[in-house]
Image (tube, rainbow, N blue to C red):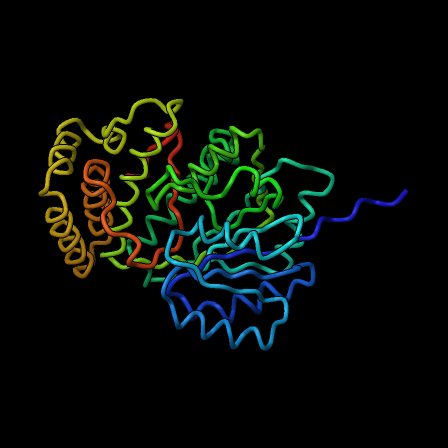
Length: 341
């Protein structure tokens, strides 16, 4: 009796503003003989990435690339689906670097099965002694998410975190990766996960499907992401009634009551951006003086101000600046809250 064959697999990636990653990504992805196509969609005006990809295509015949008007990661990935005929697509972020045979292993997880969304871990590679505070907090949030998934406390699709995710191309096309209704850039992957779950797909977390996330955020990007996250959480609650009405206290529920009230008061006003920048500057100062705990605590306070502000004022300008992904939601216990602590 012959064993069933693994379905064909292609890697699909959206990129913007990271041409320096593309050479290594192409080498790693296409070293896997199972990869039918490596599809890269440049999301917006990024001549450097297009020039880099044109050069790489002369060395890698399985590299397929195109450029689309800036429209966000999920819309770009959806364009990528049309450029391959593989049965399974592995969706990688442009700062997530696969280990050997990752795509083949993802394909194997779909053998004889349909309606699966397979998620692999992508731990953050932090630079010892040099990692920015935003990446350190992101790494901590991500570790909490993985621990909760492995313990069964969080559903994979209900808290979908893109970057190292595979599903059958037919399922992706049937549900649609992007949603015209979800207009925020952050938490778009959680919106996708909720839509996939509603369509009957099942999420599977496989700890063996490891990739490396080279997350980098300076302080300005850290605050920008916090605003995007706050806006995304609020929109998730509006679009998915099962999550319940949005409550800004989700950003402060672990704080003592007086501090929580202060964060919500400042965060809900136009003072929030200035206050957050001032607190983050203080964070840098105490860090320079050698108090790392103070650096982290003040950075988290600044983030809370802007999370609340984003939920009130919206995410602000996004499409003019690069972003690595559609947004993340790691916190156990609530269906659509953002990491704060």
